[in-house]
Image (tube, rainbow over all chains, first blue to last red):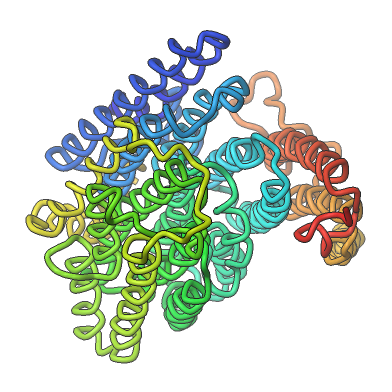
Length: 496
Length: 116
C-alpha cells in the first residue's frame, strides 16, 4: 500500500478546483496553475524515485482487495509517463501565461488544463480497464473544450472531427470491455491477465483487436490518423503543444500496457499487424508533412510519423525494443512539445505560421533560431541529441530481432524528417522576409514563452549527451512490462 | 432472449454506423446516440441475462445463491450513460455553434465554410 500513487491524480484535481474558485481573479488563477503544475512535476519525480528504489507501488482504493476494487498501480513505465506529464504540464502552464488570451482564461482555461492533466495521470496509473475508460473520457471531455474554446471557424471543424473519432474510439473500447466482462467477469487488468493465461489466443482476440483499433485512433496510427492533422493545428500553441506532447502518447501507453500485460498471447498474433501499421504510420506521416506549408500542420503530421516508432517497439516484442519505445516516448514528448512552443512563439511575434509568409527570423531572433534547431535536429535523430539515442536504440533492437525492413524504414523516415525540418529552417529562418510581411507584435519573444522552450531544449541536449539514467529506467520499465510476475504479484498479492 | 437482443444490438450498430457515414451533422449526432445505446445493451447482454434473481444475500446465508443477476454491468452501464450524456450535450452544442458559424449542415462543406 502506498498513498503516493494517488497523489499525481489528486494534485491536479486540487489545482483545478482552486482555479475554479479563483475564477475572475486572473493573476491568482495563473499563479495557482503554475504552482499546481510544478507540484505535479515534483510528485511525479518522487513517485519515479520511489518506484525505482522500492519496486512497483500499489494502492487499492477504499481498501477493497484487487479484483473487486479499483487498483491504482505505478510500475516504472507508469512512473516515467507521470513524470513526463508533470514536465509538460509545467511548461504548458508557463507558456500559456502569454499565449492564452484573457478571453480563453475567462472560460476556465487553467482549471481545464489541470483536469486534463488529472485525466492523463489517471490513465497512466490505473490498473483497471473500466477505470481506464473513465480517465479516457475525462481526457476527451476536457480536450474537447480546450480545442473548441474560442470558437474560431477552423477550430469548430477540427473539433467536430476530433469529437466524432474519439467518440467512436471510446465506443469500441467499451464494446471490448463488455465482451471481456461477459467472458471473464472481471475488468481488473492483472486479474484478467491471469484468467486469459489458460485460454487459447482466439478467446481474447476480438477484444484485443477492438482495443487496438480504439487506442490506434487515439494514438493516430495508420490508417486511423486522419482526424489528427485537421484538429491539432487549430487551437493556440499552448493547447496544441499539450495535445501533441501528451494525448497521442496516452493512446500509445494504453496500447503497450494492455497488449503486454493482458493480451500476451494475442500480441503474438497481432505483432506482424502492429509492425506493418507502424511502418506505414511512419511513412505516411512523414510524406504528409513534406507537402505542408504551415509550420503547425507540418508538425502535426510529424506527430503521426513519430507514433510509428513508438508502436514499432511494441510490435518487435523484445525487451530492447520496448525499452527503445519508452525512451522514444520521453524524447518525443519533450522535443514535440518544444517544437510546437517555438511555432507558437513565431506566431506570436509574426502573426502567422505560414512558411511562405515567414522569413528572416534568423536575423531578427538568433536565440529563437538556435532553440528551434536543437529540437528539430533531435526529432530527425542527429547526434548528440536525444533523438539520436532514441533512434539508435530502436534500430539496434530491430536489427537484433532480425527485422531488417523496419530498421531500414526507420532510418529512411529519419532522413525525410530532416528534410521537413530543413524546410522550416530555410523558409522561416534563413530566407529574407517577404516584402508584404506584417502583423504580430514584432517584439522580442516574452520570457514566459522562452523559459519553457529553454528548459525543454536543455533536456533534449542532456538526454542526448547523458542518456544513461533514462536508458536504465527505460530498460527497467521494459523488463517489468515483459516479466509480468512483478506486476501481478504487486496487484494481486503473492498468495494468489 | 439473448438471441433477440443480439440481433437488436447488431441492428443498432449497423444503423448507427450508417448514420455516422452520412454527410449531415444531425445524422452524425443521431448515429453517435444510437452507438452508445448499442454498446450499453451489449454490456448488459454479454454479462448474462438473469431474471427474477436479485443479488441479495438471504437472511442467515453468507453468500448469494448461485444464479443471480450480476449488478456490476448495470453499474458500468450507468457510468457509461452519464458520460455519453455529457459528450452528447457537448456534441449538440458544438453542432449548433458550427451551424451558426457556417450556415450549413453538410460535413463536406464544413472545412470550406459557407458561401459569403
